[in-house]
Length: 117
Image (cartoon, rainbow, N blue to C red):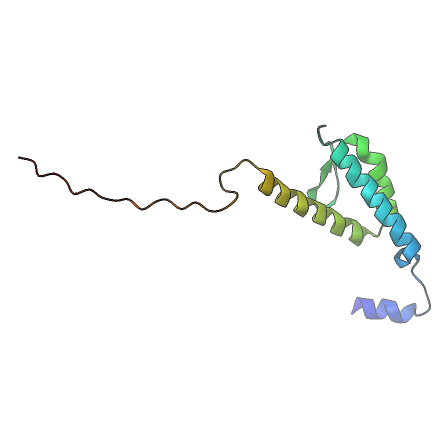
């Protein structure tokens, strides 16, 4: 409902952040930030982004550029997507016995007890 009211009050306004040039700038800033995250993954994360994403201080400049280049809803979306992909990758790469094909326990075969005399 609020969207209808907003759209009707500004029918001729073009939102510059959804044009191709702005989207490209947003995607480049996003890629730069996530590349920094991967590069600095060994360092302790000290900063908090949206949706609980933690990142090291070395990536603060690229994070600021990312936030300034993109809509806040896009930033949240990209952060959620990054966290989800990292979680899935961690589950797939983990040396845990729970990954891969499921191995079911073999059924026990009971030997008849020998008659005790």
